[in-house]
Amino acid sequence: MGIQDIIEGKRQWRAHLARVKALPPDYQIVYKEIQRYYFKVGPLELTEGDLLSGLVDFFEEGAAAGKGVLELIGDDVAAFADGLIKDSRTYADVYQESVKQKPRK
Image (cartoon, rainbow, N blue to C red; front, side):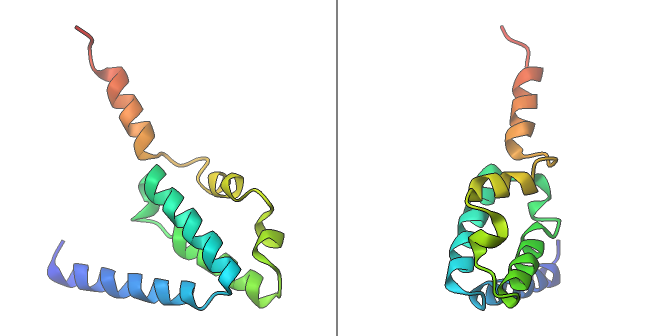
């Protein structure tokens, strides 16, 4: 990864954060909680894919339609977040696989 890639990545992240800040306050709170959860759980494609930007797209559409965030995703934010990554491998999965493969002495 070169310096230009790092600079471009930072530019994209700042643009992403600007989109989040433009959301209504209730959407921002829910987005930040989901983001914090994903950073802990670590879906492998989080850094490569468009999971978070897709979530912002979804939230922008809901806000534009005049819906409250819980009206859009339901009352259980954790279940919604888990549903988005249910078919994704996480770092926890990778760790569990590595532990199972190590021979015991």
